[in-house]
Amino acid sequence: MTSIIQQAIDEAYLGSLGPGSSPTLSSQYTRQNTSYSGCDIRAIVNVPGGEPKIIANIHTLSYSIHREKYAVTPHGYTYPKGFVRGRRSLAGTMVFSVFDRHALWDISKQKAKIDRSSGERAFSLLGDQMIPFDIACIFINEQGRQSKLNLYGIELVDEGMVMSVNDIYTESTHVFRARDIDILMPGDNPLMESTPWVPGMTYTFDSQTNSVIVT
Image (cartoon, rainbow, N blue to C red):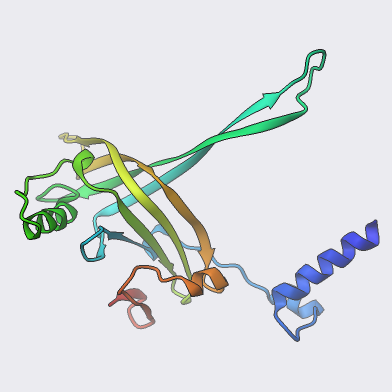
């Protein structure tokens, strides 16, 4: 049994090195991981029927996943024999810096533009009135390493803003629920290469300015 486990570990390691490679002492110490700070992340909103747009004023985005699981415990037993899986919920929070307009002003303008083009009367939208939208989080650091994370079908359910003489700037908080998520995946992942980040947009890293150029 031990030899089978070791063989599986060796095969997984060889696979991570790529075809034609073999593990060496030096390769074990030269393999690198990468990380990102909040300044390396760009959030891009994709509203159905509109154009993808970078959210420049968002400074915090968090999410959590919860799955209902119930223990199956027969009569006469203390410990469960297994668990049944129920529904899954995906929710999170977005925090925006507020300047001279609502945090989601540009996104609501896109929705109003869509309404006018379809002959409907456009109103100033509150967050909970907006149609579901997607957010693509693009990670690119100063070394040019890339990753992405996508949230799909975001519905805003709560909204609040704090204004105080004790705060040097104003921020607003939006609680959302989402339909699905693509978890954070590195740039060398085949799934990432086979799926576009945001339709119609390309991403390049400018080494001179250490910034992401979205076109």
